[in-house]
Length: 281
Ligand code: AMP
Ligand code: MN
Ligand code: MN
Ligand code: MN
Image (cartoon, rainbow, N blue to C red):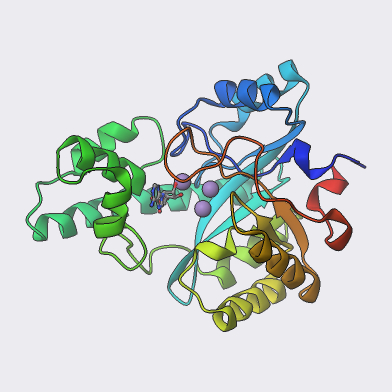
């Protein structure tokens, strides 16, 4: 059992396999430099970076936990669920990631069509090209929109076109919690409600999500995922106790741009008051 304190743990980060800036090897090298001793690579809807991450992790003496951030939905509201600790060959994980990868392409087509109806050029091919080998996502559309001079920066692309409640946030495409959670829970992996602060949910609705998530087989919530305010972390820690969830934490690092914190950095958590998910590893 691990006795590592949270300062050496980062259980949420992205590489070039999804919308991160660094390759898995570059990410592991940076994490090592920053003093991270246990890490989960959690790319959006793919496990393609895990093999490279695994060899880089052994090189640096870092404990790697297999991870993936899955796009899911609760009553048509898009949410993110981090899965941790599954086997790299897990067939159920392969099923859901492949399904979501197909959705990402179809959704990209839908986003491009909606933007075209707003009078913008067709950005689909450029976004696909921008994504290359990575999973196509809204950040690729955002980059293309900046490059084409449609918006000033990535933030503006999300504010006006792609973010919460804007046209690029296509609803009703991701697997419902009641389908995906019990199916993956049966494999014995950890299922974590990611960054609860980032959804357009009232506290009442958030508690309702967590209640359903718990009943379906969810095992944890992320109490810190970047630079939330300390009182919000306290609030999530309290929720983790109330619902008897384990607590997870990570930087959600994507690269040295945008709203992200540095690798291995996030608001302080209080290990005495939670059940840290990493103690088992
Ligand atoms: P997608 O996975 O295609 O649904 O896109 C969601 C991703 O967009 C998130 O994981 C973030 O990486 C990114 N994102 C969301 N909002 C912003 C923002 N305001 N600025 C930069 N990136 C963002
Ligand atoms: Mn992302
Ligand atoms: Mn997320
Ligand atoms: Mn993430």
